[in-house]
Length: 353
Image 1 (cartoon, rainbow, N blue to C red):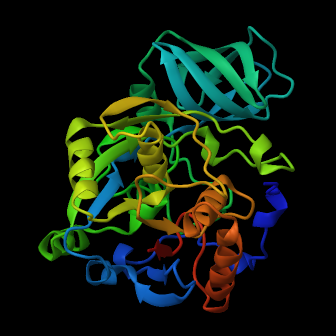
Image 2 (cartoon, rainbow, N blue to C red):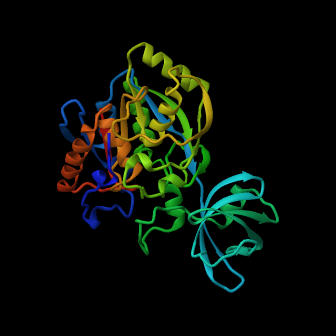
């Protein structure tokens, strides 16, 4: 079935791209899409406990965003903007560098904020990607906490009023406990302790997975045919207690409600084998129409960029096993535009049931 990247394009007024988070996390708006009928309803995120069922299993991604953006300089004084991607071994990083077209293997860059530490360019790892050696060796998390800043997406452009200290809190879920993501699992940004408490009172069970959101979030789909795109691998873990909770929910006919596309990818990476069990590793699972879903029964998500892998996943989830979800999501997004929903990372939410 030939699905093209252009099938996922749509027009969005620039003023609907959220530049700041909602004043209160759970005050964000939430569209509810019934995928059996294509009908939508309009709510606030704080209504979520009333929209879920007692017995639902809510699966969250407990990754935490690290201050992955940094600045460094060449010996010529030229400024390079960097994004930490991962640490392959102590002192061995993979990074994305902007403005490094003229850089050469063996060149040493100094970090802004700590000029005593250098990044030695060892080899190119792809378009804009470099493998670097940190000299002297220092733990990635220790160094980034000192010199890094919040890795906001490039479509958030503002001189203020928020500063990085505020973004470090806002661009983080209230339950993120495992540092390693270079982008937030944005569907989870709407939760508050009060909403989580209300869900527990409602009888909604909760379990956690981990997926450290990585470079794939920033990588555009350049292939004309969707099937030709290759995802960057991201590290995940599904712990044994979560596997047990999933097996029990499925056996009892209770819904598994995934919070975000990242949670869906973990669940489907594990469920693809046919049996749910604990596991960890790297996943490059790419879900697009007409994909099917073995584990997730409902999902919370945000409104995503045109032609993005996230929008492709959501379109697949709207009508599993077919391409009908493309039109359904286009119609829902058109309503969101008419109703002036806020889009992307700091934007509003969608519940697909």
